[in-house]
Length: 287
Image 1: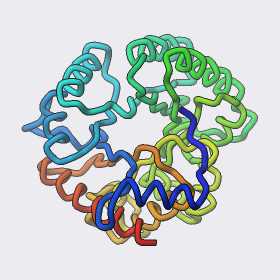
Image 2 (image 1 turned 135 degrees about the horizontal axis):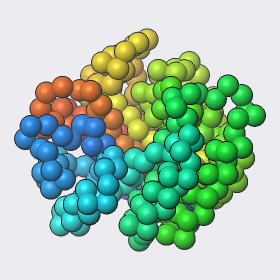
Image 3 (image 1 turned 90 degrees about the vertical axis):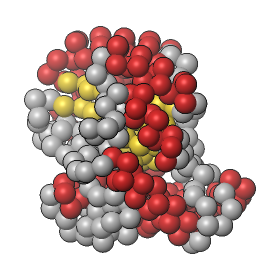
């Protein structure tokens, strides 16, 4: 269950045997439900049918309660697709209620190999210093413990303006917690928003704990979300360089597609990104 860096030879062998030249990387490519909903695709069943048609491996939805979660299970099981991650909160200003809810969610996910995609907030406050981490670390250890009993991993989701806003925040907390099933996500759009300067340094900090990645098209030096979140075949930022670094690192885990705030037809937007994924990952494999 725990990802470990591979040797260069192992990475080359894995890529060559999993995908022929011109095909996509072997990493499972899934859609976040930020981009699967529109007027034509509202229910989990309709959204799952859409991503299956377009060739995604599964989905990463936002948690909206157990009834909604069961609808996702039914739709995904019928289609033979996977829920790679479930976007759930840890609110440090309401730890007891958050942990209780997460324990319930973990029990529902048992046996599904779905990550708890954990965003960490504290009334919108970002950490002012590492001295603020004690409550967060204790809560993360509790969550990792019952997630482990359910056979699950927990991947913190760095989010602009939240307590865990940067990859380095998540890496610091994961290191302090010391739980093998607790890791983090590299989110391209949020990294571009809060940092965007030294990709190599960020991925080096992420590497020991990297469980998941999310990508999207973006503009170099983009400031707002419209510029920082676009379909994968759009934007001036070289997303292939991110994929090349992941290959060199030996990362073979799931990669999610972020489409938050992209207007228009979900089908057309996702189709553009599937085509972009094929081109970008083929380019990454040539390096």
